[in-house]
Image (tube, rainbow, N blue to C red; front, side, top):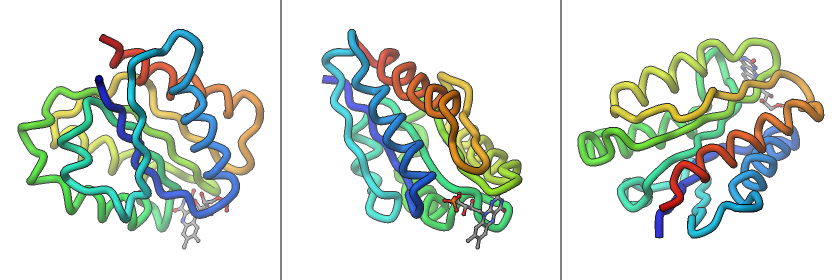
Length: 150
Ligand SMILES: Cc1cc2nc3c(=O)[nH]c(=O)nc-3n(C[C@H](O)[C@H](O)[C@H](O)COP(=O)(O)O)c2cc1C
């Protein structure tokens, strides 16, 4: 069964709202046969990444970059997963206070290095997610999960 790995750093209610919407989308009506594995970024391993077929990444913007937790995840898995995971689909969401540019740039840069294929637009939200933001997160989860169906 194809596996979708969600790697997220979720330190606040606004980040949690985005995470829950993405997770809900992965279970949308009509999506079947996709196993969804969630890991906090500080506990995700290279084995988790190697065992999965696609990825969803979630982080707040911190100090002009992705969270240290998600950066640590990439530091741990980059070389063990390089080449083996090339071409696999991924998506991401970023929550920030006012400027998520550096976090998005970092995610795009590292995933480009890994050779992952972005299979949906990244979702960025600043402040409290509104209904449309939650729907974009849901769509992100549904799109990546649907793409993994056999
Ligand atoms: C140390 C620190 C640095 C932060 N740096 C940024 C930043 O560079 N850009 C940004 O948009 N938000 C920044 N934030 C805001 C966080 O992204 C935000 O607190 C997080 O997404 C959780 O959202 P919430 O506080 O609205 O629940 C920072 C927050 C902290 C605590």
